[in-house]
Length: 193
Image 1 (cartoon, rainbow, N blue to C red):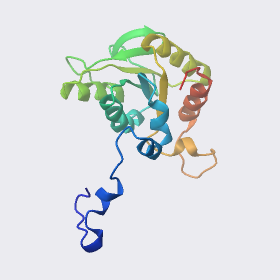
Image 2: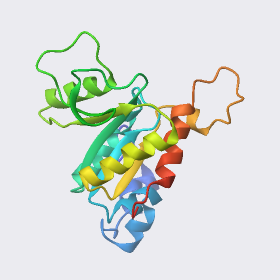
Image 3: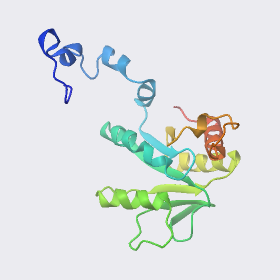
């Protein structure tokens, strides 16, 4: 039902009646899903990646939770403006580390370490993959490595703002370069989804 809404008279029970007869697997219910979720139905291993680095990946947490509830294996990743710092995690290849919650928190941490600490505090320890923000070819190289390493069949870029939609001439804009590199690299990455 609708929380906080009281519908009386002929409207009583309207939200429930609207969906009567629809089961989660019915054709009608499937057609009501957003296209992104329909495309992810057949996927099993998904990387949710912050498009521009920083805290963008945090905006994907609701989607990560939803996908996990549907039995998907979800990995999280982010670019870091200065690159991973020594001690952040296990180095997988040049400029790419697997960040886990540290036992002692270093003086300088990035969004990736914050996220790993938060996941650990919820009893859901998981690595956060982190690499330096770089040009399209470097980002593509990291996406290709993670595709093989994690056996991915989907990559989802998450942007916490709107700078990835900008043209570059807007007044007061941020630096959308990382977002553009991520979008271009994701476009070049060969995945089923």
